[in-house]
Image (tube, rainbow, N blue to C red):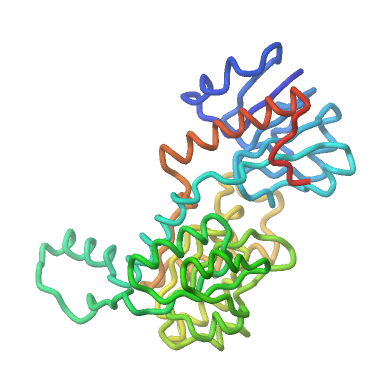
Amino acid sequence: MKIVFFEVPKKDESIFLGHFNGAEVSFCEEKLEEDSVKKAKDADVVSVFVNSKINKKVINALPNLKFIATRSTGFDHIDCEYAKTKGIKVANVSSYGSHTVAEFTFGLMLNLSRRIIFENNYVKKTEDFNYFPKMEGFDLNGKTLGVVGTGKIGKNVVKIAKGFGMNIVAYDLYPDLDFARENNFEYKSLEDVIKISDVITLHTPYNKENHHLINKNNISLMKKGVCLVNTARGELIDTFAIVEGLKSGIILGFATDVLEAERILKEKRGFFGGPSKEEERLIKINHELMEMPNVIITPHVAFFTFEAVASIQKTTIENIEGFLSGALINLVN
């Protein structure tokens, strides 16, 4: 049995060693994709993170592959449907970081409402401790928070929001009515949540059906001066529509840990033959977004705490051990 881990720094290799009796275990710091697939030659199991891209070509290049363990909750970087046709099982880490990401969400929200990053940078640059109108923020207390997606992260966001004295409305394809009663909020349609919220935060997984869940049409329904937070997936939002919403003043502030062009922007080696026209458009609009003063962008680190990383590692080990013993868990296909 051959197991290959990708996107694992050398300092973390020892964490995974010693758990898979009799298996040959190797590590690569780089991501798994078409250019690096040779490093997984003859692998029965591969473990990856979100920067890897396991498409049909990668899967076809690994004839012995039987199991993919992604060290993430999201699995849109893996062609799970095609893997299934090849008899390859895919498992994720379904529950790590639910408190971690919820706390980060409020960090972004507070930075939008109180302009903390701007104020910090101003003082460090000028040593001027006098405040002025651009520093004026707004209270979260009494505001309506729209939570789109009430899985484990969304539920923790609701609980934190109650501590801030916020009014809550939520949208979910599968509403948890017991949780809503316990926490004194209502589920509404997505359109209604968008219309009445002062702050909107996204916590839904990404799939083809909810691509550009936030778009030009429903941005036009938002309250003027709304703030939007995204710690889910960049593709949930139409970036062009967001930029227009910011320019028009409908959106007062946008804070995101993920970008629609994230994978393109992370690519350091450039493009073979140059980027496509669509990739060029996404790169250009994301750079425009980065330059806007009422936008906060972080590099997909909402999950990144000691506790969450340890949970990811533990669950990944359990997923692979489960595959080896025949007790498959956390399967997504």
